[in-house]
Image (cartoon, rainbow, N blue to C red):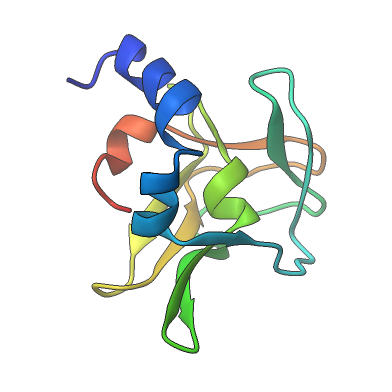
Length: 122
């Protein structure tokens, strides 16, 4: 089911569950010159551009491995859902994923994905 209700259930019940942490890895803060995490009007905390980002740019790592341990970056954990997405998560291989800018994003703008595009990625 890829309805808005299923997205809300995912945000409210799945994303921080112990089971999901095992599947997707621990959340880690990776220093970025592109984005920061701060309070969002959409949901809790979000990811916001601290520089202008051009269409096609790689924004950062969403899911990666370090010392054979899977992790999610803040970008992978706190990017909020919107059908008005400006970003997509793209798998590089079977293990890692990055965020790609779909349209120019200005400084201060929230970075958004449509969670339904990434069902089952993590």
